[in-house]
Each structure stands twice: as structure tokens, then as C-alpha cells.
Image 1 (cartoon, rainbow, N blue to C red):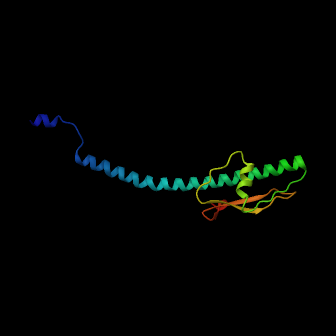
Image 2 (image 1 turned 135 degrees about the horizontal axis):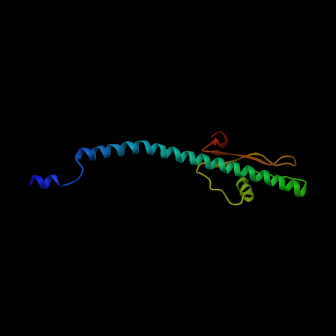
Length: 126
């Protein structure tokens, strides 16, 4: 009878407890890191949207000046999203809490300038 019990294989209770403790420690470290990565991704998406919009407005200015020798663009709070998206190849995916801010309209000597906020904080400061 004792020989039959010794031939059985498996984990002891202490081994199982140690594994559960180790998994708990790994989860305690990984979950906060995952949350930080999500916030970093939101900030990066907001910065990417702002950079793309600024590049599109600059290219629009350069194209208009070369082709027409003049440039004028009026951006208001009401039309800022549609003006920017019209100059981009495809509409960006906005992170939650993202909004455009008008800085200045375009003139014959400079392109329109825009800024953006994420949860009320200027994107350039993130």
C-alpha cells in the first residue's frame, strides 16, 4: 500500500501555495504598469493628432502659396475639426478627452496654427 502511494506524482500543498503567491506578485506589478501604458498611449495619440494637423496646415499653406500666390484660412471653434479633417488623408481617431483649440488663422505670410487639449491640458505639455 505504501509503495502505491509513493509512486503517485503531483504537487504538494506548499508548492501550490508558492506558485499562487508568485502569480499574485506578478499581477501586483503588471496591472499598474498596464494602466500606465494605456495613459501613455492616449497621450501619444493626442500628440500624433496634433502633429498631423500642424503638418497638414503647413502643407496646405505651402501648396496655396506656390499655386495661387496667396493664402487665407479662417478657423473658428465651430469649424476647426472639419477644416483639419479636410486637409488630412483620413480622419484621425481621437482619444477620449481630446479637443482642438484655435490659435491663429492663416494669412498670406503664415499658415494657420492650432493646438489641442487632452482632458483640459495642453497637448504640447504632456
